[in-house]
Length: 364
Image 1 (cartoon, rainbow, N blue to C red):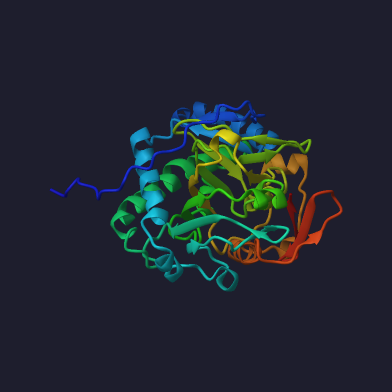
Image 2 (cartoon, rainbow, N blue to C red):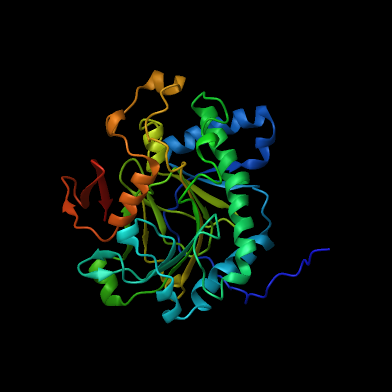
């Protein structure tokens, strides 16, 4: 019989939750346990519709991953940072600007934040095809578990959510699933991410912003909730609200690709990361993500067969014949992010750039 022994990883001890009274976003909670019946999916589709229209973010619970499995993945994620030397990280650093890909390491001090201050964020990105790139020695023993984690996210979280979104648009359940294939989605990946505390001088120069307000460029982002409060979303009235930690829950949000596919009906959600509250400022912030994108060749044109979109109307960011493919949009956004020259926008606190003929805004 195959061995059930898994390689040893030191336990990652997360920070205690903040005791500060913050302005928390009132996000919907989607119970995936209800998705097993047509009636349950119909109910959840209405909830997802409301959540995406109101905030663009929602929690997912009862997804099938245990708390123990959750903790194990955070243990593995931490090895990408504590188990790999700075010299070895350089060997596996992604050539982001030239390739338009994050596969491998994004090292600290790559993104410009503000006033000459660069980021203190590392992330290590593993394509759901774990053989696509070589990996550091400390990560290699855990690759089978990372691959299983990617498959779980893709088939048991992403696809059920896409079915609910399709139903909310009155489309056949598999329409969005069919353009998010596991083997075809070129840059869909698992991300391990760590934010490190910054100096008081850097905090002052950036107004405590660690990552400017932005939208994700894929269709759906899955964040595994962790206790260091730093993520904020921008509400429809322009207010920034904090995302609260929920044990073993997922925080799910919409990105550009979903906005383009739905003709603006579901917007890519503006979110940012800022310095944590005072009682968490001495901790690093370890993140675990699954970034999902449609298949590379998918043209990001509106799903005009949707009766919902036919009724409400379609807001195009570009003409259909000029629409980028997912691969073109992902590579353009990736190569430019944090490394391009931004222009001051018409709105206060907004900077702009044009990517693939589309105006992209950054909020600070």
